[in-house]
Image 1 (cartoon, helix red, strand yellow):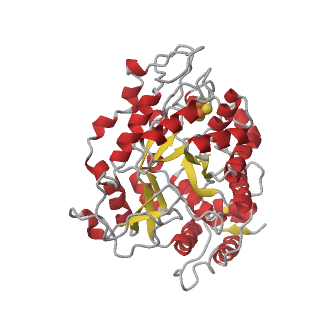
Image 2 (tube, protein in one colour):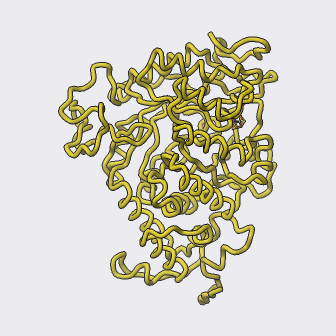
Length: 487
Ligand code: SF4
């Protein structure tokens, strides 16, 4: 243990601070470190433990869980070095492009048999008045509308209604693909896949094959929160277990279905649990290569049941600014050479922090969403839709090159600074490696409106809000004991 003594305080170094088994995320600031310029020795002047880790990271070496915990405890004087190294690794992996996807969330029901402590979205099926269930026809209509406005993806996730027909997910996908064949279905969390398999009476692996055949293209790696069974039992008893979560994800990757990966942080978890979560994801990625991205999701506490009810003495109100910055930067450093894309959540962080995160390891702005419900219901104030033109403006203000991507991170269009000033087609001269069949510079604009221009000019009120949705009588959930949830 190395001790640093100042006139006012005596503090341990970053490494010493992390060895307590219950070390919390975002510890208080300590004062140590060096000075100078990036090129002439900033790292050399840093806390020796921090310097060692950052130099190894820049040498493309894998950092350990303990290294990551040390970075979380970085002295304030060295804080920005972590961000600078993450930014450098981001530049090496993906360059100066910051991407986004034009998509729509379709959370087709908020009715759920589970009661996760962090979830303000779900409604009990036993008689709450705000439970809704969209008919399959309405789900398809929303997918078609999104596609007509330029969306390339629909993200379909929902609660777990009781007595659900195990074939519902397949039915939804088949009808979407029949009517909107060009749309990418990013659908069904591991929790939903497990529920669908259970309701269908088949193994997870068979259920994955069924929904893939029905049209699912990729899966959200949500319902992960923190992959620590004790913590899950505490904040969301009955939630999909760590073992089952990993089984579904590995099964999806084995079936050729790529997934995202996520982590919900800033609630009651320790730094150790958080870092172990990321290490588990890294181990999976080492074996399968199936993750497209990693998304840190900051806990939105305002309407979360476990916050309102005070069920945990040590609950936090989400990650602090320092914590959010470090989490994205450490993710970039931990996943270096494994997961190229680190996405920030504009819904949870807001526009200003999202821009800063593009300098702290993140390279992806996420999606336009159109109907964001989960964070909105939990109290997030950043809206349900971010238009493509607005995303591009924020990316440019952060000094990066905006590009629209598809769900698998193929770049569809890069945008020059002038592209949003007039009516041109938004095509950048340096086009990069577009996949076969994608639009390229010089091609005429698509006749069907594909591309994001439609969404830029659409009337947002036509999409409806979550607050409206839970009051619409025609979508009111009725416990369908013995009935199918279809049109
Ligand atoms: S997080 Fe998902 S499973 Fe848990 S209560 Fe909310 S909708 Fe249900």
